[in-house]
Image (cartoon, rainbow, N blue to C red; front, side):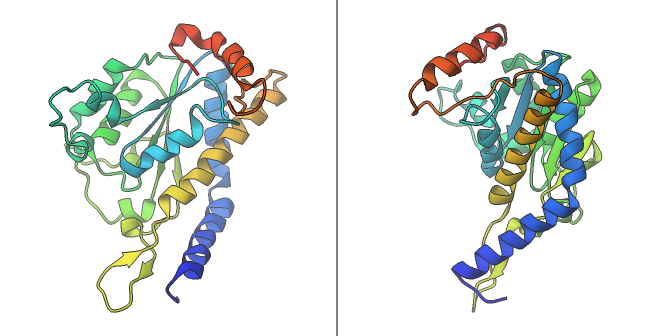
Length: 248
C-alpha cells in the first residue's frame, strides 16, 4: 500500500468497515448487557490506559452520551500522589492497580465495566476483568485479537483480556497498532485503535439509547454545554445519579 495521508484514511476506513460487518453482533450483545444494567439502576464504568483512555472519553461526560457512565483511569491514582514519581506504564502493568482503582470508585453489584486494552496483556486491565468476574459484574472488552494472539500475558494468571470478558469486541487493529511501512525505515505509522475505538464507543452508546427507547424509558442523554439550555438540561439528568457521585 502507498504511504501518506490518503493511505491512512484508506487503511483505517477498511478496518472500520471490517469491524462494522464482523463485530456488529458483539456490539449489539454488549449494548444489550450494558443497557440492562443501566435500566436496573446501575452505572457503567469505562477503563482504558494510555491511548485507550480516549475510548472512555467518548462514552463518558460528553454531548450525546449517557449520564450514568464513569471514566476510570490510571490518572485517578496519579492525582493522589504528591511525589510526582508515579509511572503510568508501570501502573498499567501492575495487577494491584486494579484493586486500587476499585477502592477509589463506587463500584456496585448492579454495575458493569467496559475494559479497553488494545494489547489485552497488561496486569491492570486483566486483573480488573478478573476481579469483576469474581464479583459477578459483567465485563465488555474492546481489544485487538490479532495483537493479543501474538503476545504473552503480563498477568500472573497467564490470561489475556479476551479470555476473561463476558463480551469481546475485536477492534480489528493489527499487531503493534500501526498500519503503514515508513519508506526506508524499519518502523510503521498510522495508529488505528483510537479512531476505530471512537466508532465502537459511539456505536455502543447509540445501541444502549435504542434499548432505552424500546423499553419506553427516556435515555439520560447529555447535550452540549455550549448550546443554550445545555447546563440546565445536564444538571437535571445528573441529579438522578447524585447518589452515585456522578456530576456534570
